[in-house]
Structure formats: C-alpha cells, structure tokens
Image (cartoon, rainbow over all chains, first blue to last red; front, side):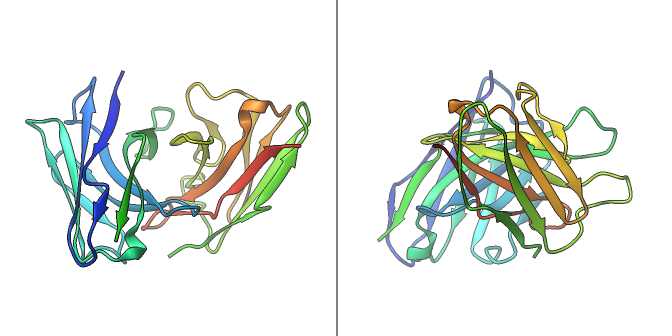
Length: 123
Length: 112
C-alpha cells in the first residue's frame, strides 16, 4: 500500500532554511494532492501547504512568504522549504495525501494518509 | 480564518459508555450542495492523525460504526458509542469550507 516517509535535518539554526522531503512509496505521486502540516510540541495541528501533481499549489497565508512546496515526479517525492525560521517553527512536520472522496460527485479531499512525522527543532 | 472551537478539551470516559465531542465554527460550514465541509481526525498516542469522518457525517473507509458525526452550519458533534480502550487519543475537527483549512484545538479522550 502507499506509504509516506518524511526526511530532513532534525535541527535547523534560526534564520536559516528548513528543508524536508516526503518520499511516496507503493504508489505514484502523479495523482492526488500532497500536503505538509505541522504540530508544535504539545499543541494542535496546522496545515502549511499542498500541491497537485500538475503543479497547482496553495499555502497557509500566514506562512506563504516563507514557504515553498514542490514536487519531483522522477523521484516520487515532494518537498517543503521554509525560510527565515525561528523557534516558533519548531514542530513535528507531517507529509500527507489529500485524497478525493468517492462517495460524492463533487470535489472533496481529506487527509487520508500521513507520514510518521519528523521533529524539526530550530535552535 | 475560520476559528474552530472544541469542547471539552479533556474527556475521561468509561469503556462501554458513549462519549461526545463538540466542535463549533466561527462561520457556517454548510454549502449550497447541502454538505458541511468538516472532517474529524483522531491522533492516537505516538501516532499520526487518521481520518474518521468527512463531510460532517460520512465515515471514512475502515472506521468502526461506533463513530458518528452530526450537526450542521456551525455546530457539530462527534459521538463515540461503546468506547473502547483503543479509542484513546486526541480528536480534532477541521474545516475546509474556506481556505485556509483550520483545526480545532483538540479533545483528549482518556480512559477513566
């Protein structure tokens, strides 16, 4: 079955750029939407961005100026870059798939598959 | 952004009994197609979140029928009938009626 795995540095210095990659295995990245979310320690979930295999992207407005999501179909991976990080960006970062609901005739996508998450500490 | 407010934030439950979690949105999540753009997720201890309910009341594939979602507009409820030990974790509601998608603070369900 399809699995997602995040990878990247666990420690990033303040003001530097956080870079994470999500590898999709067991299925093709050329379908569905792919997303990044995060969860600061002891806190709730926050959606960051998503990308469609066609290249369409959407970002959380409060992070848009610092975030870039991209996709590499040749490697079946998608990535997140976040610039000018601060301690407030310390979180577990999850990659996830947004899958289309098949029980309705209109477009509706929910997070149906998640990676295990990777802790990124800014310090 | 639409603000999602869950209550209670902590919910001790007895196995076999039912439990309900409330989720309120700052704006209506009901669209003209008659559906509410709201999901429920469960994050079990040490795990990634998993979807339970989408479009307010439709159970995702593989989700036990003891989980049910109801409500419309701005008031929603997730009910767990006959709570089992494996149901512990943090439950989140999330709206997708308006960008950006936003989550509630989470409700921690634990066994008494």
